[in-house]
Image (cartoon, rainbow, N blue to C red):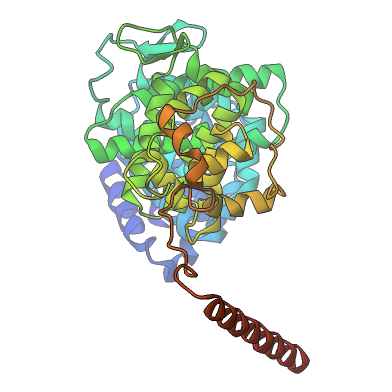
Length: 462
C-alpha cells in the first residue's frame, strides 16, 4: 500500500494492485487493506474517491482503475470493516457519478462492469448504502437510465421500447451488454425490495412503470446461450416481483403485433413468457424455493389484479376439465405438476403453488376442489378458514359455466377428496347371512371398546 502513495509509472501501480488483489482474497490477511487510509488510496486509484471540492482530480490509467476496482470488490466482499469504511467515505457517490457517464466511450466495459459490481456489493451488504442510493441519489431513475443505455433502446411509445439498432428481437444481446445489464438488475433488486409493500405516489408509479417497460423488453430478449438467457430472465423476474402491483399493467400495454399472442384484445407475449419460464423452473426441480417461487408469486399477483391475465393463465393452466379418471396430481400437464407441488415438503413452495391455483379459480372453494381434489386443497383451505366452502376475499367477475360434457356426466361419481372417479368397491356384507352380519357387527363393537380403553390409559399416563 505504501508504494501506491508514491508517484509511480502505471505499470508499477498495476503490479502493486495485482498483488493486493490476490492477497485480498484471503480473509485472514485483510487488516492492512481495510483501514481508512488503504480504502482511500484504492478509491483514488479507482477514480471514485468522493470529495466535496469542485476540482476534478486527474484520472489514473484505465487498467489501473480496473485493477483498483477489483481490489475494492474483494475487500468489500470479504471484510465487514472494509464495508464500514467504504460507507463512511461515501464511495457510492463516486460510483454513481461514473455510472451516469455510461455512454462515455472513454470508459471500457471492464470499468463499467466493476463499477456496477462494487455498487451491487455495497447495496447487498450495507443497508445504509442501499437507502442512500435509493433515496438521496435517486438510484431507481439513475439505474433505469443506465439499463436503457446499456441495452441500446428506443421508445416507440410511453411504455413500449425496442432495440435502437433495429435488430430483430430474436437476435441475442451482445455478451458484454448482457453482463452489465444483469449487474444493474441485481442492484435495482436490492434498492426496490420494499417497493411493493408500501404506497407509492404518482411520480414513483410513473418511474416504476418506465422501469417495468424496460424489464418487459428484457423478458422478451435473448442472451448469448440458453444458460445466460435463463440467468438474465431470472434477474428480470426477481425485479418485476418488487414492482408495485399497480405498475405491472405495463406488461400488457404494447400493441398486438402479427406474431403476438393475443387474448381478449391484449398482448399476452410477456405473460406467456413468464409462464414458460415458470414451467421450465418447475420441470428442473432444483431448489424450488429460490428458483420457482419468484415467478409463481409474480404470476399470482398479476392474475389477482388483472382480469385478462387471470383468464389467459386459466386457459393455459386450468383448461376445462375432461380427464376425471386420474387423480389431479397424476400426469404431465401444468395443472398436474402444480397440484403435486401443493404437497411439497417446503411450506413456502406448497403455499405459492396452492395460492396461484386458488387465484386462477377466483378464490372459489368449490372450483378449487374441483381442479385439485379436497385432499390437496385442505392445507390452503384450513389456513384460510374455508374448510366448509365459500370464497376468499378477492374481488372477481361473476362465474361462468366452464364444465365440459364429460365432467357433467361424471360429476355424481367423482370422489371430492381424490378429485377423480373412483371404482365402486364391492359390498363386504354381500353374501352374508344375518347371523354372520351380527357377528361382524359385534366384533367391531368390541374393537371400538378396546380402543377407547387404550385411549383412556394413554391420557391418564400423560
